[in-house]
Image (cartoon, rainbow, N blue to C red):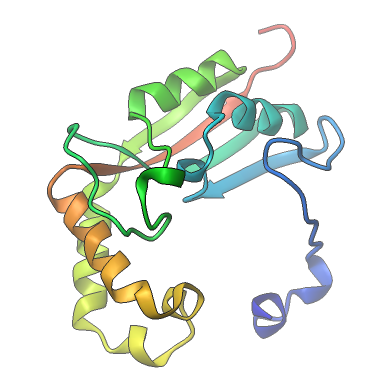
Length: 173
């Protein structure tokens, strides 16, 4: 629906598959992007290994994801999980280690937690979330509480946001 809305439906190909067993050929993509995905995946090493497998040598992976923060417990529900049962946050350092252990090297790495907090504040001041197509439609009735908890977790340092670009090493690396 969104691809059609912005006029790119003929340029988009959808495939259904599991993140830990991607139904894609080896070295078939130049770039990959994950946004708020890994926090729901327990086997982080396998997840990044699969992405590495489908990227061409020199291909880049962009990530925008939540990571664990200061060690205080996360307040649930949040946008990715209603409880700790399927929330698998790890530290930023652990994410970087999983990535480098699976054949990536860091191009850039930024903690963007403060940008996330500012985004939440801007959204709260806007009426757009209540009247336009957005995440609140997908998330349903629990969205206000999940959103407020995520913002609180960010403000209290329980959760951090990172944005990174990683590059798949060439075979000789």
